[in-house]
Length: 281
Image 1: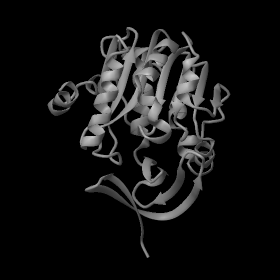
Image 2: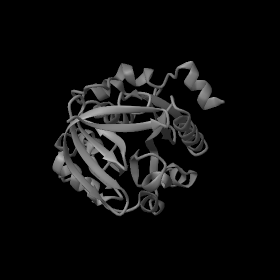
Image 3: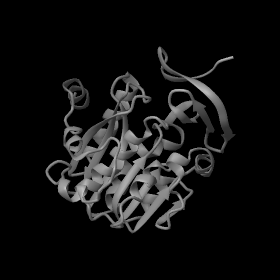
């Protein structure tokens, strides 16, 4: 008998993945958590029936959320990560020797425990001594911070359930306050193929623009995400992602990345015409 998982992108479109094995299932107070091993995409993390990551393409998403801001400001020392219970963001951050502290705020402790046990490719760096994990609400955590972080990375789920508060104007305002004078915030915004995803991305972009002096979108191509073309948000108090790119300095790190490079960095901020119209209309 064949076992398949269906990720429902809309009422009329879905991604189907043939599975090898059901590795884990649990229900926290926030959501249902499932981890499967699949034939084509390796291990996959599913939250409330929605695919969050696959081992086959997770590096695209995680590299673009981490290395883009790190190439703009190589002097980042203090980082706040909100969400990211799978560990992929932390895995990329700990590759930088100059980072002194990483605070990770994840509301669901069961997600972290499940990923530690079954997704070592992403969660294998969660014991780094620079990392502190806080199991609480990210919106509430950041309210009390001021001038504390050089970089904030918001790796949230979609704006429903536990992730809903991480797309509000209040939240972005609190992130602005929590950043240092050269601080940068990046976040996942959503897709630009299906109507509901477009509305989410547009709303998030408008709120970032109303909060940060420098506010742009950039793109990553994650084939298992709805539509494959995913938007990420960039907001800063002054550093521009293209004009202030420190390409030579970033390359001195000698990082072996699978997707990100500094040429792609610049081009990722150039939007196709249809996406520009969607965001500006």
